[in-house]
Image (cartoon, rainbow, N blue to C red; front, top):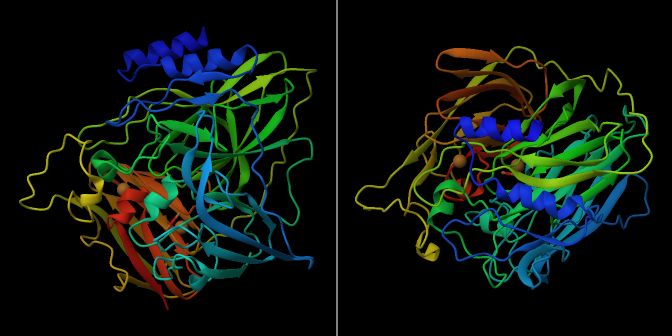
Length: 518
Ligand code: C2O
Ligand code: CU
Ligand code: CU
């Protein structure tokens, strides 16, 4: 059987952790799709965490309602405030939530729309911002750490969604040094920009899967970051899709489904696969690719990346197909390494009268050819142990409140720790540049640039270069140890833009720089 073969090959590759979790959670949903308890991922040095109910029907993300009556205008408000919610743990958890929900409401608008969002920050004692991840919005509207919104006050973000910007984006806080905490306490949501006219046929099921992870203590509280989190980024114990643990999506056998997949976790690398079904990639961070890319067995989404994929489920089978995340070695520093295992994120249940698969168009869009770069930028990730600290690397058990930036390990870009008032790089608006991002460290770091989308041209490792096989718009790209990633990019709007590692704990601890577009 395929499944056994898969497990065996992982065992022989030395990758198998306790695979129990996936099996158990599947067992819990295959029969009735009713309630069941799923073992947790395994925590990093915490007491046994709470369990979360799995196997509920997948819910669609609640939409942020447009308050405007004017065509072409999207107007609404987002309020960040403490909220007590039961995510299926049988007890209330104190979150920080946008409009009282986890994840935040789905914002859906159309290319060309004017968007006006009133943000109110009711998080006690902390500044916040809303950053529009991946979206081409003016620098002053982008929720940078340089534009904090004080606790108890508000701010109106206003921007126009540019032509040809349809895609799957997301929003999250970006305050100086405390972004990681605000996100792991619940502040993040999806922002879908629809095209004016969509090349996809009408008989496709559209599913938005906003993936987060959550750590809960035995009492259902969200613990602060520990030492291992600060070094590696926080991986929660419960993987959630639209705020649910391993929910069930029921479709007819043969159905063609379009999944918008979002990695909205602080630090988890998702190696996604639909068991024995192949995926066809139709879009990346910045929207559609030019032509569908079929035959993918798995897709790696590093923190903040998105993928838009088509899966056609077999017509003859009934039963279930799990969307899984497979083991991935992303480099781990010190103790508290979560077990390497396959986990089920979502279970697709095939039931009912079989239907015919939808046909995909061969052409989805035209991606602009950026041309010859007129300048080059070099960015290098770095880590440094402060001298004389005598740090124990065992992880866990340390008081996170005593660990500010620089107390544990320093996370750097081009040898420097983030400083809001310092400009690190300068670009000319309208000029195409070549960026080279290299990672000489021992762990993966996903690189993200604000204000625009870029096109990866090649990856270089151990002297060998691999060219990108098709053009795609990206705003976040993973770099593995020893790798240099090159991309072409053009910033069209002036102002200050951030670039950083999207492991949020690394960003907060200084792995970020400031680009001035002049
Ligand atoms: Cu998604 Cu600078 O962030
Ligand atoms: Cu961003
Ligand atoms: Cu990093």
